[in-house]
Amino acid sequence: MPYTHNTIVKLQKSSPAQTEFYQAVEEVLDSLGPVLDEESRFCQHAIIERMVEPERQIMFRVAWVDDQGKVQVNKGYRVEFNSALGPYKGGIRFHPSVNASIMKFLGFEQVLKNALTGLPLGGGKGGANFDPKGKSNGEIMRFCQAFINELYRHIGPRTDVPAGDIGVGTREIGYMFGQYKKLTNNFDGVFTGKDLLWGGSLARKEATGYGCVYFAEHMLEGNKDTLEGKECLVSGSGNVAIHTIEKLLALGAKPVSCTDSQGTIYQKSGIDISCLKQIKEVENGRLSDYAKRQSDAKYISRDNYPEDGHAVWRLQGQVAFPCATQNELTAADARALLDNGCIAVCEGANMPCTSDAADVLLKAKIAYAPGKAANAGGVATSQLEMAQNASMQRWTFDEVDQKLKDIMRGIYQRTRDTAIELDQPTNFILGANVAGFRRVADAMIQQGVV
Ligand code: NDP
Ligand code: 2IT
Image 1 (cartoon, rainbow, N blue to C red):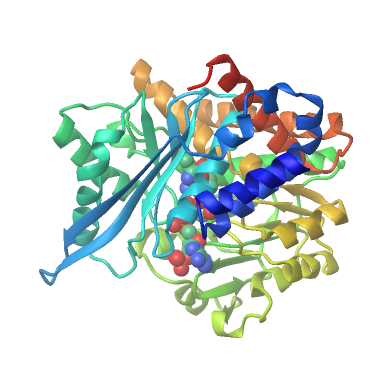
Image 2: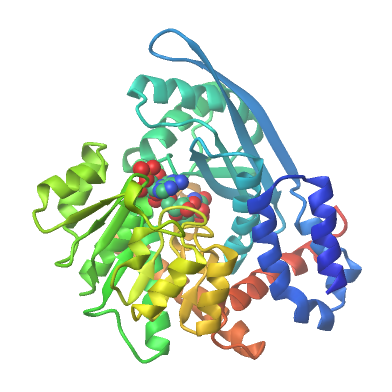
């Protein structure tokens, strides 16, 4: 379609060398073809051109002093992508791979994800190319403070509300919030994912993983199936992976794998969640330590991964939950999953499948949920945290979990119903993209050219 094609060509000129950002935009624009043909108001209002350009992008120097007294410099970002539906909302990522392309792909996905939840949330993302691995607690604190010394002026409970993502958990949110409060003299709900002691919500920590499993349950139920007894392949071993594994175990499924950036664990008898939590959450250790403590667990080091993909997706399993990072599942991995009898893929991470892998899964017509639908439970529960902060209330774990379940059912139904309406009932990428897009686009039209 010339309109969407021209948009990509223009984007490549105005924002050069942003591969991951183009990947995210192309997937969405591919979905929008039929909608743009039939609903001409979107073209008349140049909605596509406006949606692919962030409303504001902040890039800044983060200078801090390490334990040796040496000055270190990193690059910080906050991409305030779209505020048509509410304040900018999205996580902060600390990882050495962070750059403008990664920030923009994540921010763009976040806008549509947040729209799909049905909640009043705009979309944004931030982070820094800072590597938390091997840093002392003091270094982490000083980095977070230096990061907020610039960012504090751009965020606020009604403007932009950051949360965690890769490399940013409750500890980092604590240090960032502390510095924000010091600089502004305001104790307000400007971050989500806060500790329970000072304004956090019960079940926020668990929400992304639990929500992802709730989504998978709905998908399987749609095919008159359940998760019970299914061997599940999970990647990652951070916040999202751990709580995906925890909820799978609670529902009688058998998660048999997890990964970190150095290797893969395969345990046919099922992952031992308390051992995994002890190593990752308490000791800040590596999965190689897990293998040493679990006699029937096999550790596959990254050096032994297949050349065209990842060891975890070559294992036997019926449902796959990629919960680590972008582009961690290749087309060859997707074919291997299908050959091994995989019936469903549910994305806990953001854009974990390469475009080719997504094509393979869509052609196979298995149950396949994109991250912007399946992992939206995290941000949705962030909104529940904002609601509790604003009303000075505290809901129980079960109340929040019940609301999360209701929200995930709503996201599933919106995604499925839109896919059915567009005559491609198994294409949940199409369903999620179009359902999210329509909500943002109509809000933008109603708010005029701004
Ligand atoms: P964590 O930092 O808690 O965990 C990340 C996990 O992924 C770790 O096991 C890490 O291994 C692994 N990982 C990260 N980068 C790479 C890489 N380049 N190659 C291989 N493994 C890697 O992050 P989260 O669990 O919070 O986030 C995981 C994914 O879920 C991300 O895509 C994030 O954007 C997405 N997400 C997170 C939400 C949240 O609420 N936290 C909400 C929605 C989506 P190692 O420790 O070795 O680096
Ligand atoms: O990708 C995501 O949705 C997140 N990292 C969570 C964002 C949030 O604001 O809770």
